[in-house]
Image (cartoon, rainbow, N blue to C red; front, side, top):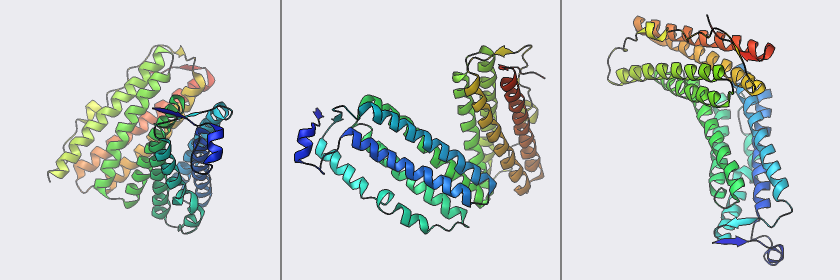
Length: 328
């Protein structure tokens, strides 16, 4: 059943019921808190990698704010529908607005030890989780258009938690933790390149990103074998490094890419991701006692370095020539 919230009705029970407009305003407030936090922390932390991470997360939160503001402009003068049980939903909204994300966010933030990256990241993970819970609670009680936007933002917030959690694991520097972070990193990289292939409009760019996606999946499968071998207390599985060294198939000539600006942005993100993957494999190579295993991770690191160079070349090509040209 769909309930229509009339303003006349709201005047009678002011403070109890919520309109879609108020729900969106609440979402904007949550995102503003997140953006301010990441911006503030990016200026305070000394670790360059974490600083860059927080700068990127602040930009994403800002895009969420813009999405919600555009949505608000569409519904601010309408009689927006709340789908479902109004009273139950309003109780949920009141409960959320009493949570620390709104009531004591600034106070809790003051207790963070700026010198302790674990403390900062754990705080970030906590409010990302709270925000996701809030979005799950509202997505089925707003319009279809709003629900679609909320669903997309939920996916992005989940990725934030995964990224932040991976940084926590890397800070511990444990071999097994680094292996799992690397495994997840290869899977995310493959998905990232598959998505990039969908965004590309030229056939050359589509094939280029699909091939990179397949390459990262090969790394994923090899890492999976290594982890399984370690769990079985066996020696690290010897990887056929020559298979990993298969070159990405060259194209004879380039092709104009219509979606130039977005693909350039995708390439920049890919370059940063490959840098991180290189650094992770170098760390693993240093920590592994087994010489054979150390060599494997050195080789994997070099493979990621090659990917980085390929992406840098293509970034130059698309920025200066407006096309993807890849080859030897």
